[in-house]
Length: 82
Image (cartoon, rainbow, N blue to C red; front, side, top):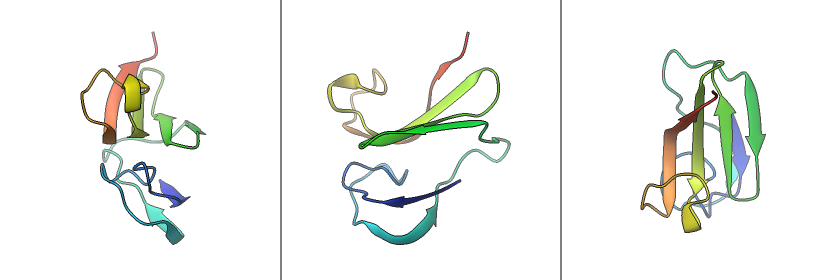
């Protein structure tokens, strides 16, 4: 998967703050993951990798992505589509 733009809130999937990417960068998804649906916001992104798995990354302020305590998440499985 490829992302670009601001990385102020971990939007490029590294799990930490970074500089804006001047060109597209690869976001490491699990080897067997195929992004079926992609959604993004100002502070993060999520992909549905099959009919069940949801991976997200970016800002987790106030638990907006996960109940994990981290304020910025790397690519993480955050739920399932049930």
